[in-house]
Each structure stands twice: as structure tokens, then as C-alpha cells.
Image (tube, rainbow over the protein chains, first blue to last red):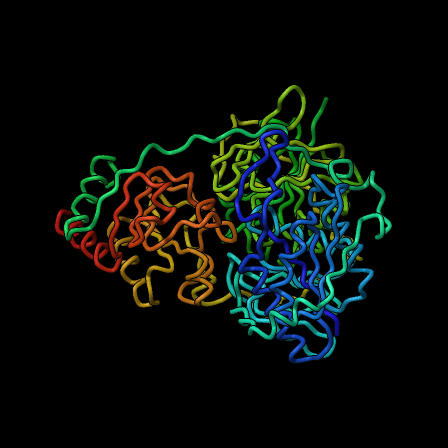
Amino acid sequence: MRTVVCVKPVPMELALEAATGRLDRSGGSLLTGVDESAVESALRVRDECGGEVVVLAMVPKAAAEALRPALAMGADRAVVVTGPALEGADLLVTSQVLAAAVRRLEVDLVVLGASSGDGAGALLWSALGERLGLPVLSRAVEVTVAGERLSATRQTETGVHAAETSLPAVLALSGEVCLPRYPSFRDVIAAKKKTVEVLTPESLGLAATELGTWGSRTRVLAAAPAGARGQAELVEDDGHAHERVVDFLVERRLL
Amino acid sequence: VSRRALVVVEPRAGRVPAGQLGVLSAAARVCDAVEVLLPVAEGDPVEELVGALGSHGAVAVRVVTELPATSAPRVAVVAALHAEEPYDLVAFESSSLSADVAGALAVRLDAGVCWDLSGLDDVDGELVGRRLALADSMSVDVGWVGGPAVALFRTAALDAVRRPDGDPPRVMPVQVPAEAGPDVVLLETPSGADAVPSGLDTADIVVAGGRGLGSRENIALLEELAAVLGGVVGVSMPVVDRGWYPYAHQVGQTGRTVRPRLYLACGISGAVQHRVGMSRSGTVIAINTDPQAPIFDVCDLGVVGDLTEVVPRITALLRERS
């Protein structure tokens, strides 16, 4: 049983590049809680069924070390696809690159976290499933793998229900569904020795014309600061703040 | 140029939700011919649904029956319709289901997909999507290259606009292609408290709570205040993750986007993921013990205090005054 967890380290500081309107990824990156939760879910599948957990990310090179915490948690190895040709990749390109990397690994289960902090995680898993020709079980809260079946409780805006599908499959989790295990000092040291394989899109057989802004089917046309709220009125609760709140509601004709 | 669009809707309780009619209205404003894909279940009032779609700009309604609430058959139907006669725009209101459909569809049609849109315009003959990014601090214009434009709109972002009476839409049944691709099987239909629509999308007033509630029991404080104000309870992701309240009430990036006249944020720190779900609210009042909480940067009135003390006092004072 081989599980791949697709993670997306996000910049510590969220800002858009003035020139391109794209996310500025020049600084350091972190794994989000949602991604840690996805790694934890994959580790639990391994605890139950045996096998291997591989962490996969498509990142600018600077962020490769951001996968180290996932290795410290217990993932067996990491694969990073990186290269300048990936800059400006949209959903189509990202899903193509990840699909190429996943195919190379021959996996039984692909796990993604709920939503990356900076974009459209919610579209990525279904795009990836389509590329791989695999069923997609999304918005999962509780996951069970037994034999060739993947079962889960799903949580959507229309309710909570059970769903299942056959492996191999793409599994997308709903939020921080489980508490990530806390690595010991020994785990952290061991993680330094684990393999982080660095691939380029070229090594996956992808042509430059399919990648980055070339391959993308969307464009950022303009970005500008949006109208902000005025300075807020702040009050300290001295036992009477509720009176100010009610007066404020009256002033704004909200009652 | 004649521009064709398909809007995919999902009726709930025999009605097309207002936000989805808003997406239809926006598509009709920038396209010459807008079709709607309408999945119906047994007992749905098809004629009424078609009427509502027609009065919001649909020229044709493609009716499909007995569709499970999964993405694969929808992707297959839309791809088949597109193969018959291509669309320039395929639009959805954002939901768990429509996001699954849109992501797969983009790959199947080799089409660009823009998400989280709150507006759509025609600029010099090109479609331009309007989107707020980075906790709504930035306004971003996005465009599509080649192929059909796949567009996902924020929930409740667009107003439904009734059009002057035109011809009623043509009604055309469609079949799901036999080989719809791998899919999941839904074992139980939603039930219990979770199956009840939260009413968040259309709420005028939202009383929301976060991690600062401290316990499941304290949600009653929000419910009491919401009852007095005539509002709906919203919660942030940590509250749902802890199992304290149904997901249907979650506000934020992985939940619903709301646009009420009043948003009261109690014990919510205001992480980016939450702010994108509420930043377009009219008036925002925040209550938090931490004076450094980012929610205080996006509110109109901020109270530094303990919600478990302040909220019951607001409720009591409002009751007293009414």
C-alpha cells in the first residue's frame, strides 16, 4: 500500500507580486495545519495497512525544506517537483505536474488536505483525479481503508453522509480532521537523513510549452488594493461594553 | 460574436437558491444565450424551476433526472453537451459538489478555471472575472485563455436579477452518457441536524463564534443572541473540526461565504481563511479577549473582552429594550 500526500507549503508572509499579481513565493514557506492533518491521515492508513507514505509537493526550490516536518512526523520520503518553468502554473499545469509525479510512483491512494491557504485547493483534487482517471472522494472527515475499498464520512453543506469507492483513489480531506502527531527529537534527527528527491518537470517528460504561464489557461489581468474598512472603534470591556454594542447597533439602524 | 454559456444549478427543497440565480443573472448579462443544466429529483416542481430560470435569463433548460449527488455524471453530461455545441462559459455557484465538477471539467475540456469570483464582466469583448484575494485586501481581475471559461462564483456573491418577460425557455431532457468514469458511491443521504440548511447564505444578521467559545455549551450564548436579533449562527473552522456545530454553519474559505448586513464575530481571531468568508459583510462587530487579534483589523466596532460575559449581557439588554 503506497500513499502519496500532496502538500503545498505556503509562504509565511502572504503578499502579491506587484508586477504579476501572483503570490510572492520568494520568502520562507510552511506546511499548513491542513497539510499536517493530511500527512497524519496517511500515516494512520500506513499504521493500519502497512506500506509507505510519500510526501509530494510542487514548489520553488526554496520551499523543499518545508517538507522536513512531514518526514519528522513519519513519512518515509519526499518528492519535490521544482523548476523555473513552473512559475505561474495554474490549476491545469499544477494538476498535470502532480499527476506525472504520482504516475511515476505507482500509488494506491493519493491524499490532499482541504484547501491550501493561498488558492484553490478545492479544485486541485478533482483535477488530479481526472488526470489520473481515478475516483475522487472529497470532503472526508473519517477515513477507513480495508482491502480494495476506501470508505469515509463526508461533510458537505448539505450534510454528513457515508461514501465509498475502490482503490486506487484520490482522497481529499475536510479541514484539520485529525491532530497531527508530534515528532520526538529523535524523529526530527531521523528526518534529516530521509530522502528528498528533487525532480524537474523535464525529468517527468513534460515540455516547457505545457508548463508555467505557457500551459496555463488563466491569466491574472490586474491586481489592486481593495477598498478597506475605516478605522475601527475599539472598546475595552469594563463591564459596560455591551451598552456600547447595543448603541452602535441603534446608530447603524441594525435593530 | 455570439457567446454561449451553461450554468449548472442544484435545486434545494424544490427551489433554485438565490445565489445560483445570481450566477445565472451574471452569465445572462455578458452572454447572448444562456442554457441551464438542471438536475431534478422525484417530486421537484420542474415547471416552477424552469419558470424561475427563464425569468433570470435562461433561454434553454437541460433537464436531467436521477442524478446522484456526485461529480462524475455531471462532468460527463457537461462535456457531452459541450462536444455537441461548444460553450464559451460554464458557470457554477461554489459548493462542495460544484468545485469537484469544475476541477475535473477544466481538465476534461482543457479549459481555464477561475474560482472564488464575485463578478463577471465583458471588457473589450473578453470575459473578465473579478475576485477578491488575500483576505479580500486585494481585488484581482482574471481572464481565460482559449477554450471555454470555467467559472466558480462565491456563494451569495451575486444578486439575482429578474429580466423583463421574454420567451419561456426551451426545455430539453438530457441523458447521462453510459460511461461516466470512476465515481464514488454515496451510501446514506444526509440526515439529522446536518441536513437542515443553515440559512447562512441569505442571512441578514450572522452571530458567529470561534475557538474562543471554549466549549460546545457556549454556542447556546450565540443561539440566544441570534434569536433576539433575528439572525443565524455561524462558526469558524475550529468549531466544526471539534464537532461542536454542523459544517453547514461554517463561514470561511472551506465553508460558506456570507454577506449579511451585520456580522458579529465572537471569539474569532480572524485568520485569513475565516476573513475571506465574511469580509464583505456590511457592519462587523468583533469581541475577543486578545487585543492583537487580526479580526480587529477588519471590524467597525471591536470589544476587547470575554465573549462569555459580553454576549449574554448584550442579549439581556436587547431583551430589556424590546
